[in-house]
Length: 123
Image 1 (tube, rainbow, N blue to C red):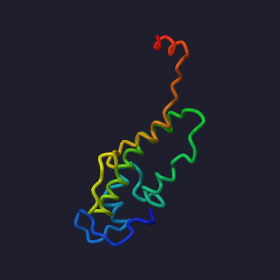
Image 2 (image 1 turned 180 degrees about the vertical axis):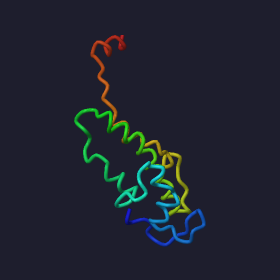
Image 3 (image 1 turned 60 degrees about the vertical axis):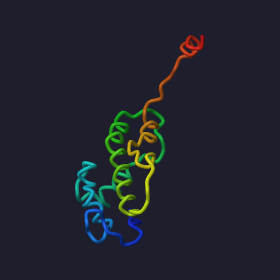
Image 4 (image 1 turned 135 degrees about the vertical axis):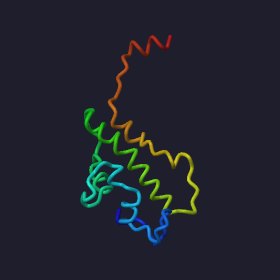
């Protein structure tokens, strides 16, 4: 998160400078992600560093559970930061979707459909 924000900008809370430290505090990132305030390097980076580097070969219920809780919150926080850093921008409804469904769908188990089921529905 070292790149945020790119230039000095006021926060929507009225604070004159929405620095990285201010945004983490103002947006209550640690509380929302349910991680310790003193998590290193910071709560948001800690969670982002936990992202799997590749999709697991097999379905992992614990991985899906963890990211089902974290990912929508991360998406919402990043969207809020974007709104603060780009106050004059208009965001589309698609941009404001914080469900995180693209990642979460990849972590869900693949459902298998038997050929007989496909054939019977085609008739």
